[in-house]
Length: 357
Image (cartoon, rainbow, N blue to C red):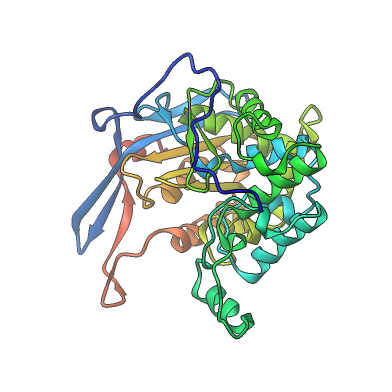
């Protein structure tokens, strides 16, 4: 097992060094939390809709400002792994794009990726974790030996991405012990993919929660990049690895999040790509390449699904099953309860409504 090393800041040249994302004054209200007819909370942030050609169709707040896209970039990171020879197929590709729940099925898929590379979970440098769902934890407890269950990096929500990186490093002939180092060829390929697909240079590099390099890009660049991935299966000029990523996410949505979790529900029921990221980031993209990216300024999750889904339906109505949309919105919207009974809802704020017909 490689020695544990503290995260280090990447050494790539950084001509500009942004030190913050957009401000409250630059943000717009995205959603209101209404309880018994009273607005209890307001979520503010930015949102952007990009066309299949990457141009901006609509925006709120300051989507050109730098943000950490966090796990919304996993589909692009998976393209980099595939470029460097990662041997991933079907649900394994989807898991590399996912922020999964650590169920037995998720853990086994990550372990299989590693096995194909002649590796095992001891090579993973993401933190050990428990499954995120109680059912997954119960599964682990039932399968445990006399000493009881132990945390494992396979259960960490980024283990698929890390397994993909390791597969790329091993099959590409690179050092598997330094697969998270910014100068490792796999991570340098990630940087190249991001700049190519998002159409802008990475503004800053940090360290993500899982230990991988964390790039700073604009919300507009994020939407543009994921839009290109979503359109890849139907474009003859698209990169084969991008088409493989989009197809895997659509065919195996359980691996992207979890059977009943929001990204999986959106992908499965509407046939559009959906990927959440930590600290209030969400991106969704239709098959024609129309894409929506949302960032809640306080890092909350109440705005992302609602705003992204409604704007995607508004600007790409022919790409979204409008009959299925109300049921999906009801499934993924946060519940406002009183003693277990609905007493309110999360509703779109006026700036978002102004963009709708």
